[in-house]
Image 1 (cartoon, rainbow, N blue to C red):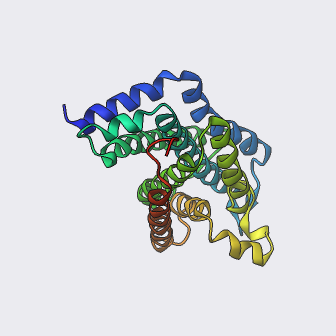
Image 2: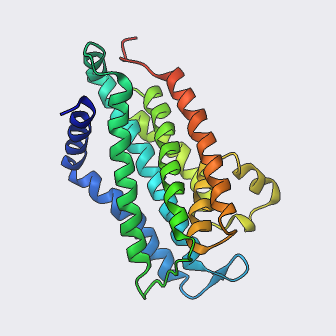
Length: 250
């Protein structure tokens, strides 16, 4: 078994061992879908777009980004606090292999979240309708997870305790959720706030999933969103490299 396969298997087993965390990773976004989906059932936004076709992609993007950021940030913080990274440093296994194993778990989690969430949203009680362009959501999901994994690496590199990870991550994700259109239509915000939201990765993630699932903007819409997410992923990866530490002692 290769070092990457062994690390991925170990990371996966460590992830599923925390059943409470796994449960709420999938249940939390579904709770928002049920509440908002039933509360605003039959209503429309954005010039006739069914509310479920707006809120479902938004909550899905937020849930996947939230899980990727928190999961990676907590993992990196624990690895460094427990000196596991110092042990890795003394082995032939390169750091990119270790981080890639955690990325694979985050990507797999995001894909399972997307399938489960979409399946529930398609139930008649919610009535989500998929446009023919829905496969375009796959590259958006891939790049969205990548961008938020990179953000998680930055947070995990800065925080030394679980409390610090939770505080920083919540300060990042909670305002971003409301400013990026995940729960509240961006079109109803003031113009300056709409412009500001474009510097937030979640805005492009939400727009990309919405464009793909609702058929908004053809293929050009998701393509533009993917490009923006790729830029964010690159920028935060560079920042994560600058903030990375092997141990809390250094």
